Length: 276
Ligand SMILES: C[S@@+](CC[C@H](N)C(=O)[O-])C[C@H]1O[C@@H](n2cnc3c(N)ncnc32)[C@H](O)[C@@H]1O
Image (cartoon, rainbow, N blue to C red; front, side, top):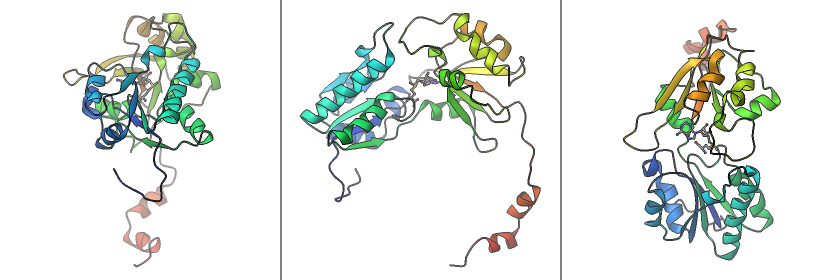
């Protein structure tokens, strides 16, 4: 692990475990886990805790804190409190969530906010997110057209403007419209408002893809493609977990052709750079 003598010792490591079981854990996450006295995990991966125990014998899953019909925010607070308590008791400890620990992982934010008030230091290490795996599974490069991404309930609550020429990823579609934890499948009613909102921007025949990246080495990504005008019915009977990809409807025209021309001119590069 990179050492910085001016830095205070870390009390809480926050790491991401990646999406594909044990295969996407980074070397620095492994090192943080090895340095920790306890590791608190949030993931559904088979055999993952057993692997983590080879790095740190004291691994505790926080997944049992979810309660059917229970308020998810309360659960996240309980998870954060357990990690903070353990760090106050005997640090360093590690909070390890699947994916990237700063992409829709509320306990991370709570731990980061509360730790300084308790005199604890935190170090967040990135992990491979579903964002990364989705780009690979869809063959999507944000370079040419950018990328917009929103949490599904937040999109509806704020009526965020969507740009139809920019690819879009919608997260937590399966949990849309409720802050309560539930393992029950959503019915068409759950997804109707999302469909109605999306057809304000996209033509009803525009094809969307629900994508679930593999969580085990031997699996292929699951993808279901359907028109936005059928979203509610298709989600009600098809794949609900995963992320909803909305491809762009068109490419935005170039507004500044002079800039593009200059970008290919050596004289322009000379003008905007300084000889070293
Ligand atoms: C609470 S967020 C956690 C995201 C995680 N921290 C990450 O970086 O991937 C859960 C959401 O991530 C997305 N997600 C998680 N696992 C996925 C997978 N295997 N394939 C596609 N999307 C996934 C879905 O949008 C899901 O609703």
